[in-house]
Image 1 (cartoon, rainbow, N blue to C red):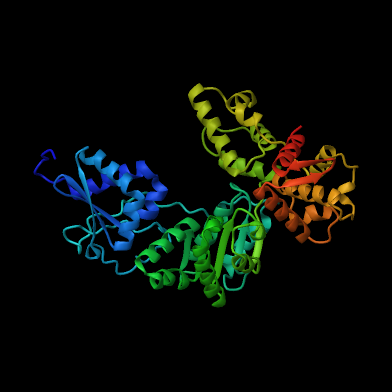
Image 2 (cartoon, rainbow, N blue to C red; image 1 turned 180 degrees about the vertical axis):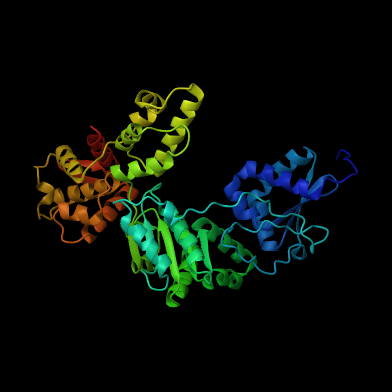
Length: 473
């Protein structure tokens, strides 16, 4: 082995460089899951990298899974002749308990113990800008989100006497996270004695894995079962994690039994989440479940007015044009405002309709037109050669029921209509019929089933694609 410098690299700088090189190999998400939260120490030796683990079991698994990536990272940091030594030494870690959580910062603990002196902290969390929490006062209320907003206000005013758990569901970019953050801020302001916890489902999972690795389940549970309100964003992240789901079910039961608020957001109605455990779905639908739909024309106009404050000023005629032509979510509207300002700044042109069409050319060309329930009904009948009104019949034969279920699925995907409105259009007595139909079609698509509909047999995915192209005509 070639001789190396007698002076040792700075341990903190070396660990940082190793982490950066390893992230480049396996990605930030996998690194945070398996190497974050003081699970592994990277320490420089004489011409070698020492990789220390807290337990033999974790040592063997991680070396087997990521050994090659760790060696590559060490070679990039120390040179191609560097050796890598894996060791197990629980004394270097001494995890007394998972760190108490602050509601503002739920990331995994970042402190690491010094290899030479385990009692001192060799790395401090980096200080960053304070998180800017959204409030309900900033939320634009419209027909698409009015009930969900009212539920959020109710949770703040009386957190011990509202629908519990509170579930807000809908597509991305419709304001679910805004409402959840608004509940958190409102609880802290209105109830100083409260200890609310706000966390994403991804962070909840990371902390659960950490607790399992260090056998600190009691400390983990105290963090989430002793709070006065638990707010979890993006609950659908747990869809493929049955172990974390079971832990959350027990946490949910404990909090609800004590009359403490649980509020979550998810991307669809719990009944339509195929990979959530039945036990979890049952508990979620036992609370208050409210949709947050994409904004309608008037709400889009109000959102654009609120976002357009500043320089250069955007005329009212331009805002009305954008509200009528951009049919996407709130983030798309914000992006349009940013693009207009950037274009005006760098071209020196005034903000007017001609400039707007040039600045947002691609966005406007791809804007989706408004689709109604009747549009979906007509498209399904045309493609499958059914008589007008056939989907409203009481017939239960496959020739009618399968196209009707497909129509319900497309209505939920391409319109802002609720389950109740869709069920009423197709002659059902309750919204549960529409919920069941949508769930059935999702299952078909997941399994890529073959379906005999109309005059031929279709692949379900081909049929949905054909119906969607008909909708866009």
